Image (cartoon, rainbow, N blue to C red):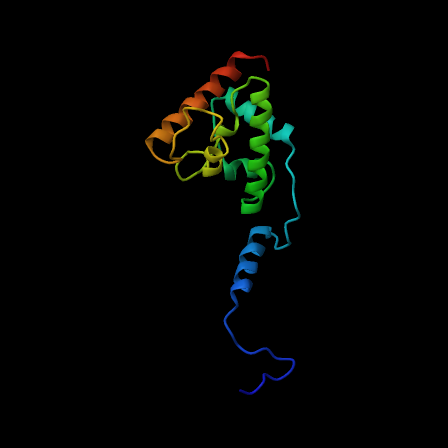
Length: 156
């Protein structure tokens, strides 16, 4: 088989690792085409937004919350945001407060993401086994009502 001339690459389909790299690069792309730098979210800012939502009896989609925080939706940013949401709930649980992360839901079905349910396994006896469907919806709505009621009856 003849070698490809130096300075030119042979025409070929991208290797699997190239496709993965391209997908990862898209996750970090910004609307202006520059690479997204690693961002961290201020837990106090996120908590403040969630408290305002609870007092207004409102929920956010993941994308809307990222938008309010000045970002477009990307998987890496959503993963970082979810870590902050879990931390906010852990701190709230230690203070005897209901969870606030339940106020952030998927646009597609109005439920928290799978990770919200998985990360609470073992913490709550009444957590549904499935993170979709009627049982998950009823559980989510009950937790949201707890947050709404609690933060509407406590000092600002």
